[in-house]
Amino acid sequence: MRKASYSKSRRRSVSIQNKPRIIAVANQKGGVGKTTTAINLGTALAAVGETVLIIDLDPQGNASTGLGIARKASQKSSYHVLIGEASLDQVIIESGIPRLHCAPSTMDLLGAELELAEFDRKAYRLADAIKTMQESGNTARNYSYILVDCPPSLNLLTINSLSAADAILVPLQCEFFALEGLSQLLKTVERVKSTLNPRLAIQGVVLTMFDRRNSLSEQVAEDVRSVLGDKVYQTVIPRNVRVSEAPSYGKPVLLYDNGCLGSQAYIRLASEVIRRERDLRAA
Picture 1 (tube, rainbow, N blue to C red):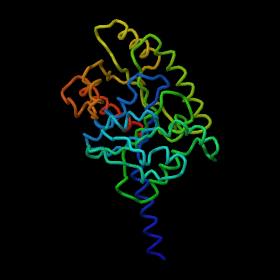
Picture 2 (picture 1 turned 60 degrees about the vertical axis):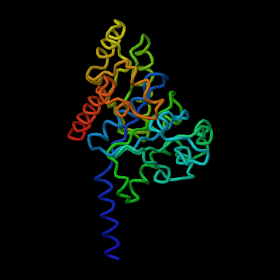
Picture 3 (picture 1 turned 180 degrees about the horizontal axis):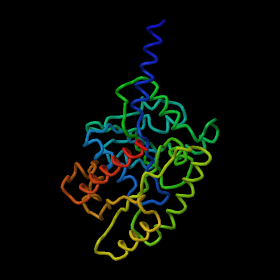
Picture 4 (picture 1 turned 90 degrees about the vertical axis):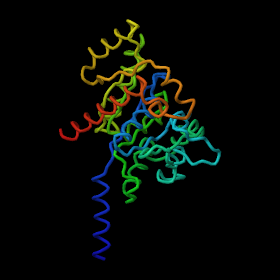
């Protein structure tokens, strides 16, 4: 009995020690580079030695296909995790990129919001699934980062992501109405923080599709930085054709063309994320 108790205690301490940082990649607007940021940030983090899980919670499943994971009718997915038909461990797939795994999405997620409304703890389904995985003692699942790719809306899927997350990372396209959409998202973050997840913080805002030849991009960047200050990453993701091409080949841009401007930007972004996480943990 003493030996069994020791093993259980040791397993729990390992789980706590290796608790991942959970970051929701979210913006209620579509077409802002949210999924592109999730898969390329995940790839860049894995490239520097971090172990990363990307959870695809978008019914479109672009994070899955962007990592070369084909959709199959019989495939268990993040949908089955949310409704309790599979554990997170059971749906995780190796991406083919060392240290980077994915919990894929299927079209079933389109109806998940209605189904989740019938469950207890409907806003915590993802948080509970992640906690169960961590408590399982499966050392193969000792991720240092879990990135959740959210749908482009503030629905129950996104609320599940924010309830599970330690922080939110917001991709923001350099366009005229950028700040207007951002203010709505930040209000949602504050509501989630006050009612569901008090530890939720803003990891940062990353400016995407930045075009230095366009004065509007410079103006938007200046406006966002004046409002949010150091919450905005120094790294900006440039408008880059190689970034746009990569998903059609089922690859992150870092594998498609490691030397392009977009790839180098995501590598710098990963460095900023790691530095911020290190500062948060030290605080």
